Length: 228
Image 1 (cartoon, helix red, strand yellow):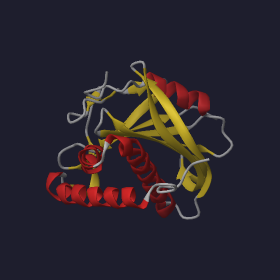
Image 2: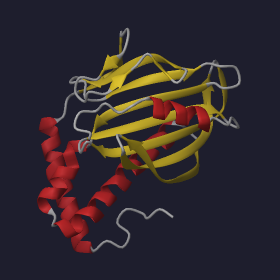
Image 3: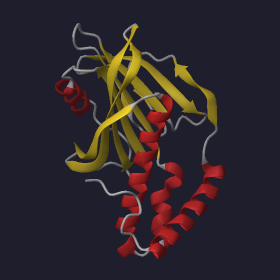
Image 4: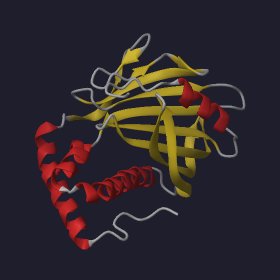
């Protein structure tokens, strides 16, 4: 069972975290790049490297073809790659996003909180970041149903990275027709201390796609600078 952000956390700790977030938000207005009004498609051939993070997006991954690279801000720190498995009866779309932890909040928390409180504070922060992602899906897709959610982990470079996952169901145009689809959200925060790695997986409701999704994820290494 997932704990709601703030549950069981002392009031004084919550107050200190709130103050930290206010400080970080102020810093963000100076440090963050400008976001485009509309995301920009990049014209890319061959493997693409996100310059800011070092993440490499190949043209093909485990049978999935890359169909686009999208940049969301002026500095290229927030980008995604779209991949598609176009096989009859196994149509699956996967988008991979790499973007900064908002205002480097983990560092800001470490500055103002004692070590004994830091783990609890970071857990609260991670829960809130994931809740924001879930809320974004519900706002964009009217009638979206949350089917399940939970904690996960992912191994990269012999290190287990904790994350969160959720599965939604809603109606959406997919492969040229409106149909009921399942959409999986995977979020791994604090990668190399400053990056978020997110996967959005979409496939027809009722399709058993987990083997293909797992194969894709394990075939796409994280090349983000700073990882061990």
